[in-house]
Image 1 (cartoon, one colour):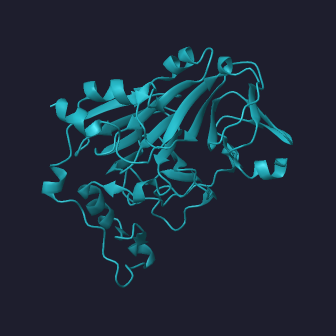
Image 2: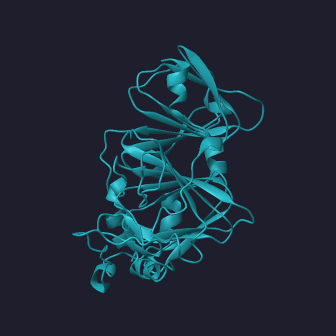
Amino acid sequence: MTSDKMEDRIVRYGDLVPCRTAFIDAHTPGSDMKENFSIIGGGVSESADQYVHIKETPGFNIGAAVQPPKCRNSLHTHRTAEVFCVLSGRWRFFWGNDGNDGEVTLTEGDVINIPTGIFRGFENISTDYGMIMAVLGGDDAGGGVIWAPQVIEDAKDHGLILGENSVLYDSHKGAVLPDGISPMRALDEDEMALFPKITTAMFVPRYVARYLDMMALADRQAVTVIGEDGMLVDRPGFKLEFLSSGSVDGTAYSTERHEILMVMRGYWKVTWDGGETVLAPGDVFAVPPGIERSLQVAMSGEASLFRVSDTDDEAGPTMNFVADSRQSH
């Protein structure tokens, strides 16, 4: 494959196009400074203004969010996996119907696999802008976001209405719901009561992987972070691996899987028959199946990247989560 065609499959950090009206809380104070990015696939964005860098999806979606200090993403849940890798900053993740069941703080390089079936939110608690990368299970990313009832009500007070078609309408700009489209229905009390309460003691050991642990484990080979035999055991329709400079020796390899490279730190040279490129922190490279490629660190110093590949598993609920959560009561 030519270098030009391969370059079309690379999304450089500096070329990312933000959307500031991606979700229903885009006008709600405290959540109105977010920037969202659809890197591979449209994800769960509710805005017609969302720019999608690579439309082809390999069984999952890749996105990102940038938020200033004290900016939060409102409580919501997903039908398929939502995995975050912290690229920069310190982030507080919290969960529960009211956001008070538990919380954990993640720093650069940490990974969190938030289970389906619980409401979650997150907040940048750094002193500067921070960025998180997201992997969403399924080509359709689970078919949209399910918002906590209060989020929907708060949005109405600030002019945003979410249609049952998962599209946002801004009444401040004169937009109205089209004929035949009703507002998205909020969950009622009985439905909310079905969501489990998950303690921090149950959550953190099963769904959080720390950067320094991954660096230690990747000293001689790639480490599976999320997978059937991973640090975080799950089968979300994709596998997440972590590589450091000790994980690679420049040996060429090929796979029939789609492979997405997301650089965390350092500079990585990717070589294939017909070309090569160097990836920097924040760059994302969608390597197509069947292409022989090699990876090596391009410069001295700490280097790490995440590698996401599709699996034969269907996207869906978090593995064993319902049974485990019931046992935690």
